[in-house]
Amino acid sequence: MSAPLTASAGTAAIAPGARPATGFWRRALRHRSFVLGAVLSLLVLGAALLSLVWTPWSAYDIDVASKLHAPSAAHWLGTDVLGRDIVSLLLVGARSTIMVGVIAVGIGLTFGVGLGLIAAARKGWTEELIMRMSDFTFAFPAVLSAIMLAAVAGPGMVTSITAIGIFQIPTFVRVTRGSANAIWAREFVLAARAAGKGSFRITIEHVLPNILSILVVQATIQFALAILAEAALSYLGLGTQPPQPSWGRMLNDAQTLLFQSPMLAVYPGVAIAIAVLGLNLLGDGLRDLLDPRLARER
Amino acid sequence: MADTGAPLIEVKNLGVRLNTSRGPAQAVRGVSFALRRGETLGLVGESGCGKSVTALALIGLLPDSAVISGSIRLEGAELVGLPDAAYCKLRGNRISMIFQEPMTALNPMHTIGHQVAEPLRRHTGVSATEARQEAIALLDRVGLPDAAKRVDAYPHQFSGGQRQRITIAMALACQPDVLIADEPTTALDVTIQGQILDLIADLVAERGMSMILISHDLGVIAENVERMMVMYGGTVVESGTTDAVFTRMGHPYTQGLFRARPRLGARKGTRLTTIAGTVPELADLPAGCTFADRCAIVEGRCRAALPAVVDVGAAHGVRCIRTDVSMAVGGVGA
Image (cartoon, rainbow over all chains, first blue to last red; front, side):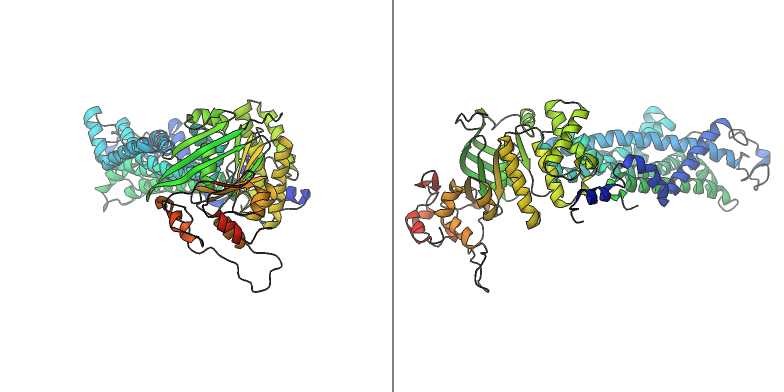
């Protein structure tokens, strides 16, 4: 990029995207993976919201007489081993999926990012302490901490969400501290310090905005992992308790009937895949859109 | 802004010990100088001679593990050992710094207007609107074309020279008393270099600031500062007015540095003279003169102890015990 010598050339060069806020949605709509990710994520969100007001059948009514029906006009995707309508189960299941994902990732983000930023800003023994504590937490698999929590608090959705959330903290601590350290080493941070800013302001104004895109992408990955972890915990009877439907429980219920009715496993599997794929694409798109340096290339 | 004669910033016997992976390193030893309002001082030396460490010590940005000895006084107030919170109030407000690399000295995530206005809002407590107006005025003053329109642009939308103008605007926002410019033009094209240095010189004169200009370029030093200090291995080997030092170089290192620069009009094929050897490792400096291993006129007693400063003229000191020889055979002056 050569230096524009005249004022008019300089203005012309920066006119597009000079204020990224106004152009954000226009650019977003042109970003293919962002649009696809947003559509898939909204699909899951829409299903969860729809289930609050309407489902084709009740997701809780057991009708053993009509168990394992093939798809029909009455039951669009058939029924499961207890005669429950699959479509209704999927719709209601989306609720627990979103709840688990949002709350667990929320816990991980809040504590993980906070601790990671403190570790990077403080250095020294504070950093050591935080990192060793997160290593310690990391050493326990999510399932194990969920079992421990369940022993104390009893199994259920709250227990599994808390366990998954706690398990996510160290991942966020590491990602945050690692990328924050890289920002702290940049010259603009030195310049900010030379301008008289303290470490708190530098963290909020310089470090956090520069690692936000990394965190957004990490959060979408963690969201997907949380959904999978919830499925695993449900299988062990530690997650969502019956009769509350969840995609993980559906998947595990279908396991025993894999040869009889394989489609029972496919439906929740596809639902999980859509949610995970949607979130990953969304995160990817957001990373591009949030970065002003990439703004002009789209 | 009456010149009372009292120094604005006074450094006495400054020493900095850094903890490196190779053990403690005495990065700066016995640096002393005083600057009155409006005076300019140049620091010259090659990479690793301690000039940037000296600058960072002045602005209080050395790592926490660094041990600082001696005294730095700003209008009589001691800065060494000042708690960080108090130092934060000085930085950007009374002491400012311009960095070498304009491409990385600006945060890519914020608009330039925001970054220039930030120190103002922080130190003077003006409103956002006033700070913005002031930022536009500053950007205009540093020669950014169409400042009012470009104030909301991001750093990547500017060229290197323009970005350096922006960092200068940032550094000057609160009208600091002391400006430290750490190789402000090293990363820029030669054509832009001159413009930026002229701009800095104008601003220094206009605002009555004191400036410490750090450079490895003797030409830059010669044209831009009144006094200079040549640093080598963490010590000041020669100091004096720029005229005096350039006319009568006393230290063999200064002479070597001068001989090593390319000259206009030299015959084609003329090789540049180099200083044999390499810069000493700061983690294990020799006991005597730091330049002893590379010096052409070294003697046994040079290696015994760090030579004291010898006055060779009015306010012109040389840290060499053999100035009688070096200044007789120096032969590059005038």
